[in-house]
Structures are given as C-alpha cells and as structure tokens.
Amino acid sequence: MAKMNMLQAINNALDLAMAKDDTVVCFGEDVGHFGGVFRATSKLQEKYGKARCFNTPLTEQGIAGFANGMAAQGMKPVAEIQFADYIFPAFDQIVNETAKFRYRSGNEFNVGGLVFRSPYGGGIAGGHYHSQSPEAYFAHTPGLKVVIPRDPYQAKGLLLASIASQDPVIFFEPKKLYRASTGEVPEEYYEIELGKAEVVREGKDVTVLAWGAQMEIVDKAVAMAQEQGVSCEVIDLRSILPWDADTVAASVMKTGRLVINHEAPLTGGFAGEIAATMQKMCFLQLESPIERVCGMDTPYPLALEKEYVADHLKTYEAIMRSVNF
Image (cartoon, rainbow, N blue to C red; front, side, top):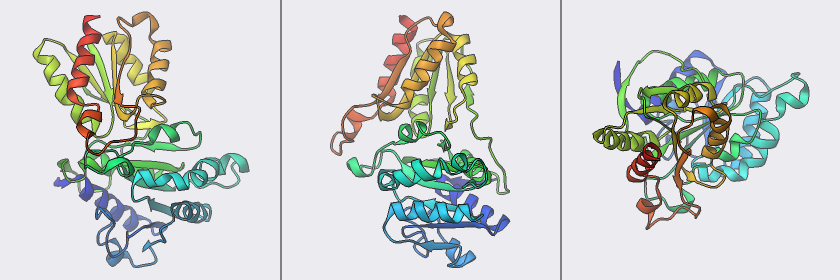
C-alpha cells in the first residue's frame, strides 16, 4: 500500500473513477489546470482533458444546476464546491432539485451518480466564512446521502462508493486533515459501504461517537479517560444520511452511556437527532443522560477558534460526567 495524505487519497480516487468510467467528470471553481484551491484535482485535466475536468464560473447555484442537468442525462458529475460555507447559494438546487429528482418522476428519471465534494470545518484559522460544518442542514433532506471521512483510507473508499452510488451524495471533506492526516492506502480501486458506522475501539463503560476531524479529538479524550480507568467504545459515524442507528444502539445498550461530539453548533446539530433516537431505542439501558459536546451557538470566530471548538478537554469532561453520574 502507498502512504498518502487525505488530499492525495481523494485525488487518487477521482483518478481511478475517471479511468474506470468515462461518464465521470469533475468541475468547479479553479479545479482545472490549477487543481483546485487545495489541489485535490491536481493533474486530472492534464490526464483526461478539458472536457472531463474543467473550471466553472464563480456561481455555486450554477455549478449545482449544471451538475443536476449532466446527471439527469446519464453523466456522473463530481462537482466541487470550493468551501462548504459557499454551498448555501446552491441550497435550492440541491434540496429542491437534486434530492427530489427521482421522487417527483416516480423513478422515471433521476440524478443518481451525482456527487458534491466540499471541504468543511475549522482548524485552519479561516474565520466564519471558511470554517462552518453544514451537515445538519442536508441531513433534513430525504433523497440525499451525506458522507464524511476521517482519514485517507476512508476518504478514498467512501468517495469511490459515493461516485458509484445510485443516489446523489454530498461528500464533506475535513480540510483540517487534508495534509495533516496520512496513512496506508491501497493503490487499487476499492469501496467502503455507505451508511455504515465503524466501531473504531471497543470498550465497556461509555460510547463516544463522532465523525470527520473530530475523531482525532475524541481519540485524545478517550486516552485521557483511559488513564482514569474508563473504558470507552469509540464509533465513527462516517455517514450522516443515512446514519447507522443500529450499530450505535448496539454499543449504547452495552455501555449504557453515550457522548456525541461534533464541530457544528449545538442547537439543531445532528447530535440532537442521534440523542433522540438513542433515547428511544436504548431508554431502559441508559445509565446517564446523553452528553453532547459541540461547537457554540455563535458564528465561527477567528480569534477565539480554540475556545469555540469541541476539543478533547471538553470531551473528556463529558465522558467523566457521564460515567460518574
């Protein structure tokens, strides 16, 4: 296996998908010769030509509309939204067109095979226009899949599975990890099943759940808890929509406790949906209230980013509260 960072794994996945299927095309702002603002599409235009990897005007609504049209005609567009914060002008196209295309036609036509890639989250001192985590907005939309990898191996396998999916997928990439996360990645084509959580570490005292870049933070908190004799079961959700409630519930029934961590603000965040579902599925097994460790209900700050983030110390405190309740 090759050692890759997350950007290299994403680039490799796009390369393999385009080589395998000539209906796969990549486009977005500066994705052509420049290779994208983070270089995720580097050299793809040189290899596959301007007809299959090309720049678009600076209009996210137009990018999404163009992607819908191409997908409706049988192509497999992988459209890049340069930052997840910029996806909101495309919200109407994604929520009202992409998500409902198959449903409104009675399965006569669809936009399956469409993937929107976008870097999301903080950790790069980007301020409030380059640091948001908008996954919960799209989790409220039937007809979409929402996927978030935590490392290069997952980024490649989940992206290839997203491109091969028969449903439109929003693929949020934790940009904090683009170059920081490295690991062994198979060079050949492989897919990781969408909608399936991964039990990263087994434990018996408390279940700790996160996704994306927050998995690294959770690992630090779990290590601190372990020093206090607390055994944590760690789950990476990976897919926000659909999400794997059964795997999470099986863990919570075993440990009797649940701590959920995500970078997005607390109010309306996806942790609330998870907590409500687990409260119903595991009510008689719960030993303490479900804890949520999330971002603050404020715009993402620049100067106070470290105070804002749902870090390992806040997560450790939540784990100990849950265990000592």
